[in-house]
Every structure is written in C-alpha cells, then in structure tokens.
Amino acid sequence: MAQPLPSLAAALADRYRIDHEIGQGGMATVYLADDVKHDRKVALKVLRPELAAVIGAERFLQEIKTTANLQHPHILPLHDSGEADGFLYYVMPFVEGESLRDRLDRDNVLPVDQAVRIGREVADALDYAHRHGVIHRDIKPENILLHDGRALVADFGIALAVTSAGDTRMTETGMSLGTPHYMSPEQAMGERELNAQSDVYALGAVVYEMRSEEHTSELQSH
Image 1 (cartoon, rainbow, N blue to C red):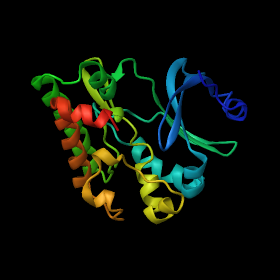
Image 2: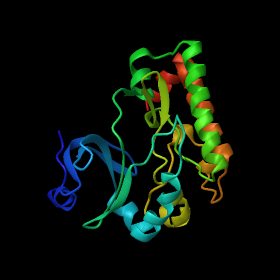
Image 3: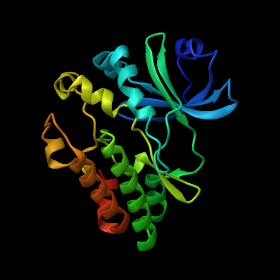
C-alpha cells in the first residue's frame, strides 16, 4: 500500500488527511483521503509533476472552474481543486462501488439490458458536457464508475486544462491524453482540434467491449 509523499500530506494537512494511494493513471495519482472540514471520504487526485509543469497552476485552476460547473446525475462532481507545495490537485467524491473495468474483469460480458443502460447513461453525461463545451478525451471503462445502480463518468477534471495547454507541448513531454484502444482516428493522429465525435467514438468502443467476449479478451491481453 503506497503512502503519500510527506510533503504533499503536510501541505494539505489542514484540509485533507491522506490515507493511502488507491490508483494511478497516465495523468494523476489518486489517494483516498478524509475531508477534514466535512468529515467525508474523498478521492484526491494529484497531477503528475510533468503534466503540472506543462499546464501551469494558473491555467489549471482557471480552466477547471468550468468542470466544477458541470452538474449532471451521471457525472462525478468536482468538490475542490488547488495548488499545495507545488502539487496541483483536484478532489472528487469517493465512490463506493466498482468501475466498469472491474465489472468487465469479473463478468467479461454484460447482459444486453445492462450494457444498453450504461451506454445510455454515459451518452447522456457526454451530451450534457458537450453542450457546455467540455470534451472528456479519455472515455474508457476505468473512467466509468458503477454506483448504486447507475453509471458515473469520472475525470472530466483535467480535459479543459490539458486542451488549453496544447497537444504540442504535451507531445514534447511524451504525454498524451487518451487511451489507445479507445481513441478515435483523429485523436490517435494527434489532431489539435478535437470535438464531441471523439468521445462518441470512445463510447462506441466501450459499448462494443461490454458485449464482446472476444474484444474484451483482446484488450486485456495487451
């Protein structure tokens, strides 16, 4: 069980008591933490230092305000964001349940009605976000949480900030936002201006995976 960096824990001690690391992605490390003020469990996501350097604190904190205003039943809300001792972070509810990836790892193929329901709920969330000018850019089973019988799309937190930073500067650091198996052709080619179609393409790949045993096995073998 990985422990947080002492400097990070100390910098946030007055607001969040960090318990332990619960996950890592290409963009951030996720910690389970206690929100001291509100006495609740939260997921505290800390951007990788390379990414934080590319985006910059001012841009990150400005762009993430738009994400904070996304209010939808199938979008995991943003509680907080900030900078502490050089770390850029954002805070979301800690969801009791599992991700769609966990579910697929266990069951391999979902029944038609469940796959359709999850696909519809994610589509509703994306439609809402797109109408508010936000493209997710990394729709995949790991970013779809299943809680209390419904789907929640996570990690809208850095999409705008990364877009604002520019894919060219991201490429210079060797980073890209997105997961190859779910990327639309234009995203995989590194096109600067992406639109809602890229998210729709990724969702299509996820829906296909929910119903295809062969496709699921292929993805897991990589």
